Length: 131
Image 1: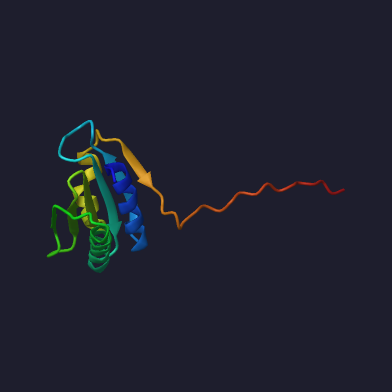
Image 2: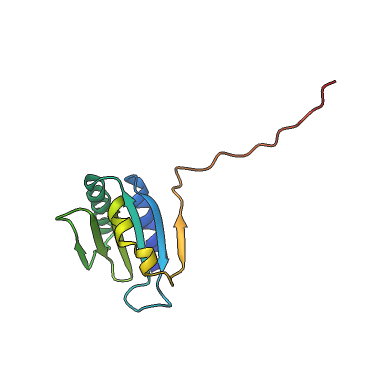
């Protein structure tokens, strides 16, 4: 699995635990540290932990082990490092404070939409004149 495929899989795992505001920062032209950051928000420390546990467990079940993880003590920002992809799971207020998107402002950003929240289908309505 390449790093682009891994970001998609991680995003889906995040959505499975109701993470939101998922963004992927493409770092390939900026640094050799990683190819991508996957950043998401959660409403509570419990949800931060649930998302981190889900990502780590499901990827480990597929033989993809993290190189490093941290932040489980405070649960305001959990980082899971998969070498080419680094996952940042933030409690909403911590994400606003650290603002990685601004810090890495030169990186192209892709917003990932939750597939469960499909927009309603627009239907054409036929307008008729009544006399």
